[in-house]
Image: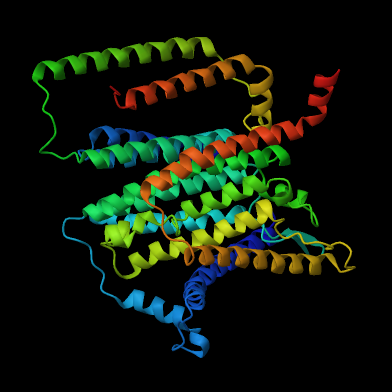
Length: 348
Length: 166
């Protein structure tokens, strides 16, 4: 690996880290503005023009609040919980292709930090590890509401991981690769996977909502039953880490949905514009972020539209509807892929 | 470089495995076991078997250990409720554990003598393409039979967990 490439990757990591944190911070602002719009209110409008400095004020408040570690909590695990939640949330961004290649002084640079040949599985590994942040935090608080919230969250995430994995299996069957970069490249111009896998996308999206613990699946912090769920005992920036991790997860899930099912940085007529490759790449990145923001909006739209599920309804939906549907989707995809062989076998 | 990483991972794996046994708090034991799994996954990556490494993390660290943690958290184990074993049980456990150790050590001695020099034929044998080809061409029947085994285990668990209907 050349020095230029190393420097480029280091800059890319820093840029994506900054963008992730900025988008997570401004998602809180967006969430409140969208909630206000849907409920016919104005929303935050005091800090700066249109309340644009509200996330900075919130962040400053988080840092300045008193930090409390409960007397009977195990201090190390209590700090480890939010740190793990934040760590796993930030780790998923490295395999997402944020854009195509850029040519600079005769050298091609890919706008993806690393192209693992098991990219999709890597994301599943990190996501399945993310549940520990919530579980350790909830248990070490030594509070029954926290423990119940943590147990709910982990049961929910394990249940929905199954359906999510099965919906991805059908996608892998059509693409034939686990590398996210290759999956995106196969969807050039308008051949997006949503056209081939509509049912799979629907299952994936529902599971992504459940994995992020977002409404209508936010049973883990159901305030009417559990005070604040797993982060009841948390204060100051440790609470901020949990809330931030949720918004980062939302951003990464949106990026994943955009790149797996909605063509990533591809857009129609991208090759017939007559532009330089670098400009197409930059335009593609802008389009990609547009798709991501659309999905973040859908996350918020659904949160402020649908009421929360009851826990037994949640489990029934996961195990008795989504998993059988995902298996049916795999079966249909298999029949579709092997249609020629099947025709020969049946009619000859 | 690779050798140093190997040593570091081995030290982490063994230290965490010992801490699983020696820590008093069952939750800490589970957390050390997760660290052990991560060190072993690191060994898989060193062997160029990324698929095995990531599946190891998804299945063991991500699913099975979460269920372990789940059960232990619900049981609320602590020093007061810990059942005390009598001396006879402890002596018997020590003897049987020692016998297992002797068997493993003996098996390892025989293996070491007969193995000789190992040569790597194809360093990409652990990638997902090669693994899939081997699994679905050379070992299709054992692979399918093991899935039937899992299915029977699942049905067994459902029957055991089902309420008795009168």
